[in-house]
Length: 377
Image (tube, rainbow, N blue to C red; front, side):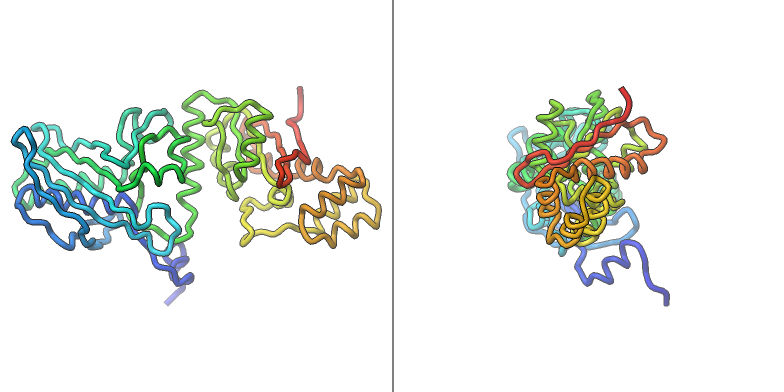
């Protein structure tokens, strides 16, 4: 049998355990709660259907049926999120769904309970004012409600309130506040399955960040490798928070998405060592997937006027920081040369798209050690 590729192949070769998205957990909790609302009995475990047809089962960690002050009834079920071996901030979080009867003909109405955010900015796949329950989880929940309604004689007209214990606190470690999702986490997932270290969530958040900036009318965004470069880019250009993209190591994700969804001006800001990788043509700047090429830096230094002794010293340097320090002491503009080369790499990806690019290289202290400006007036 041939080797399996794609996500399944990645997971198999890594030996890591997959997990379940918050959307899958919310769907399981909703299905269990709605069945209990109609029958008084919670299914445990509860089985759901994922978008690609898989039928996983989830154990319940919370169950409640209660009378409401107006005489109605509600049912709540909870599922503990298992993210597998992925370093997910929501791993171990208790995802709850409370289901109540809704207005006849209303279908499924979604509400944000404690720990689930509300959309406050345009540019996301949900209207402003809506609970941050993404489109695919919403459809999964609607399908689960319809399945229970058909089996148990329900109308399918329900109010579904999703909550996540400690979600507001956990959300501070995510992009949500910057994207304008306030009050908690988002209920996410397009397949229902979390693939460990797939990096897809970060790349998706970069795309959503561009969408939010465009919807807000921003004409200038900055892709930054970390918090220090973010502060520098914001200070240099006076950029608002929603124009700052936490690029991390994913320079390629920023550039490729902006090629398809352009903004007139892009600043790429980051540490000298990381941006030296971009200068050398790498679009993934993670240390496990690209390395600082001292020989490449030595060649740049030579073009900038370094003599043979300095060129050899740069080639033998232990780190990118050492290389830039050697060149700065000798008056060789290695930082500017790296910035120019990084800008050239970026423009190569963006070719044909109307995006002007400048680059800011910094050292660990946040001092600017290299700049490359857009060409022209």
